[in-house]
Length: 282
Image 1 (cartoon, rainbow, N blue to C red):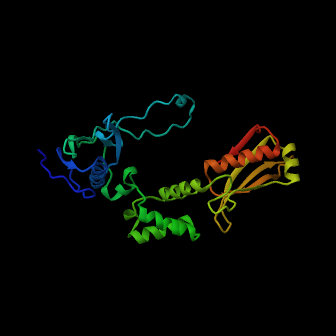
Image 2: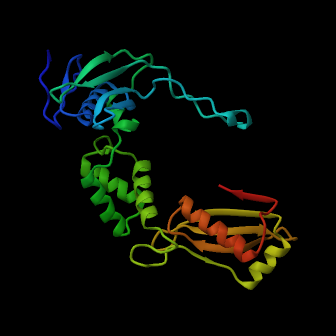
Image 3: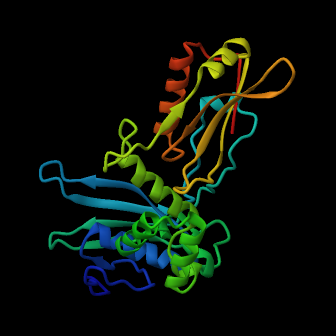
């Protein structure tokens, strides 16, 4: 019944055919993604049906990532610059079904796309192909712990892999990995080693100046000149002579949502102030 023998878990090739068998749904995804890499498109999971009693996957649909169209957002009517539509309604997909012998077979396969595919040499930039492997994660942790900056770190990792195309992830993925790692350890301004990660300070003059010139506040984190490469954040305003004055400053562990929530709450609590009329930030 199966025209192609089931591949052992972890072993794939770049051909996909109707009736092909896999040891698991995860293995099917890996092989379909490898096939997508070879011809230049990205993959995403559309749905997975499960057995209600035992909970195992009975069928799954994997599609081209340009399948369908983005849902209409009610907020679009008030947005001046809309996001570019990236989906094209592409119908390329496979559906795999769980058989009684435990093997997943491809029961439906559509291989035609309705848009020009990416050059396979650039497939590593596509979403489903970008992945930081466990070994690479250990390497990134070591580079980060050694104080190597992001740009030098990504260049080193690319050289180790034999080039950017063999790295398997982008600079943004690298940055996001380190951000997520730090967010896990960021708790109440302390890291796992009980070291201070967020520091905010003001003095009496800053508080007095804010009371007088609080109408417009600018906030930004453009500076990373300290040894640990931490963002230096400044709350800045203008006095009646159009001179720049500082209302407060902070060294942040990272530019994360948690860090910004913490510093904004700390700032307005110390200043005993409501939100200013105008607040400018990047």
